[in-house]
Length: 435
Image 1 (spheres, helix red, strand yellow):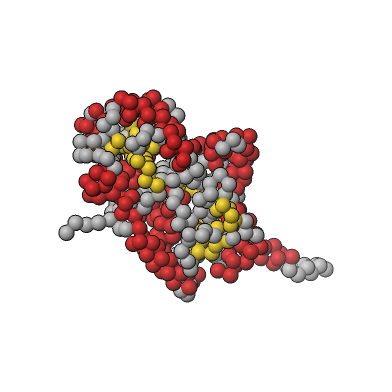
Image 2 (cartoon, one colour; image 1 turned 90 degrees about the horizontal axis):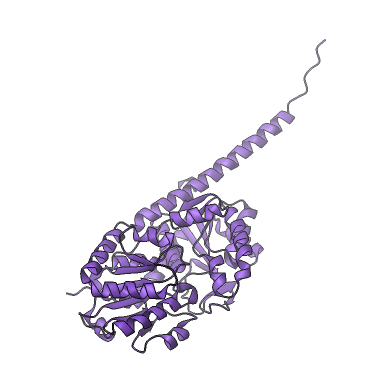
């Protein structure tokens, strides 16, 4: 019997079941003398949005539940979101630059009341916008331990949308936002070092893993390759991600045009959607396949059915698709950044200078014409991906959460003891004068 990856409907059912389980964990009595972590995750993006932050946070919720924690997510409303009882959503509007993303501005007093009623004892702000800002402010007012995570180079994004003048104040705001927490979790050593140079404090690494069941070479599909115009002798080059200018898609399209003129046998297929989708379709060679947004079984099969994955972004702080492609045994060609080199682990892919379409085209042509090198890179990528365990990642994060909570408690006890000591000194009776 041929095994199949989970379908989109199965993924959605699992999300709903996880949500119910999470809610049961939320409503269960607190045990262990109040030692149980009750974590409020404040984020401006969450499922069903398809991006690395939303997917990572959903997986985090499941992992924390499995480890006995109570979790509640605070996020913007979304017309396509299923009703999840463990998620508190706030009225929102589409973001002008990204209609797929939503902006919400919950009041600090409302967030403060929600955290108090739910008895949160740790707040994790995953984004620095409306919901994350409200979570930060409310946590500090309530004296709840507060941590942040850094997922997106927002200052770098500003340059791509004609907002370069905001880059400097953007860094100032981000530094203020994150330095207000007991920890700022970052995905790689490279990002940690960059932020440290910019004055960010108390940085800790929260790495990433990969789901080796959903992303695996066994999901390679001859039928899907045929649908994409590729025979077994064709080199199929894929892209997975948002179609947005900050993701380097203009460089990718320019490279595709150069490759198609030199090697018509190479085929390209792009999975994803975004604000630059129409622009990419208009500029790409006529035989490039645009699959739009895909997930579940089709995404698993798409990865495994490609031979090469191109990752042209140089703004990503991690790039979850890199690990998914590596676990699917693909040769990787990625824009050369410190964070990407760290993910590729030395020999799991080749790089090209960011925004350099001719060099990217040359890298594609080189791998297309040398199957032995392509296969060697793919095997190295698979081996590197298998060393990335989500269990290890979340065990380390939970230990960091507990450390923050325990340090906060110790600080509170110390302060109370200091106040009691001060009060007792003032309460000492006056000495009796000697004769």
